[in-house]
Image (tube, rainbow, N blue to C red; front, side, top):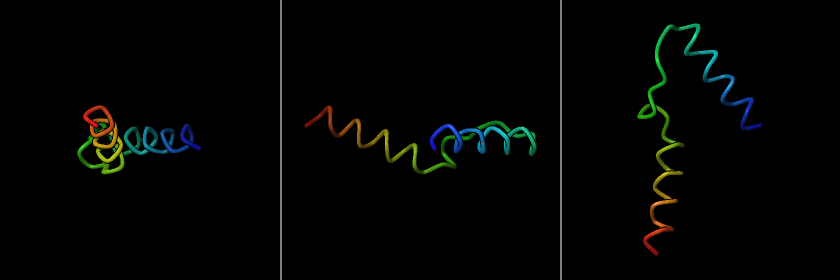
Length: 41
């Protein structure tokens, strides 16, 4: 499922001719924040 999601993102970037912008995708930021909080705790 994860690979399919990434393929969709890569496909859209290719079709729209834009580079991937991590700030646009909030899920990545949530995961990174969870990992950072786990390290601190």
